[in-house]
Image 1 (spheres, rainbow, N blue to C red):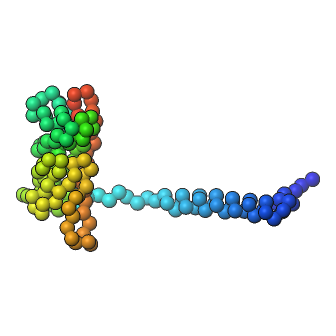
Image 2 (spheres, helix red, strand yellow):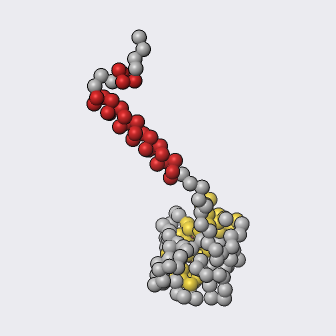
Length: 164
């Protein structure tokens, strides 16, 4: 004997529960599909990105500051205006483009290391070397501010490989 859709559910509460579950499942799937987008990651319009790979040998004296947590150096021959390398905690390293990300590279746009910060001498913007975030944005609310441009790092024994 074939059961009809309505006959399958003996009372109205079973049917109501079934429809609620189907509705919620459909709503969840629809929400998931709508949240998937093909939007592109927004690039910084001020900075060109270069492909490179550079090995920092932590045994060499020019990299002594990177042996300790909170230590940082500028490697001037990489990227647009150099690369800032920061030792976060003794084991984790971050590498950032040394050119200020909030204007075109020019004579004053190379950031300088000030403790655990990088500072742009053009407008005194300060960036965290731990996160790359701008810490003292201007009062202009309609201006988009960019964080420091991040480069990949990989620990290999006594070396740190920086690449883009």
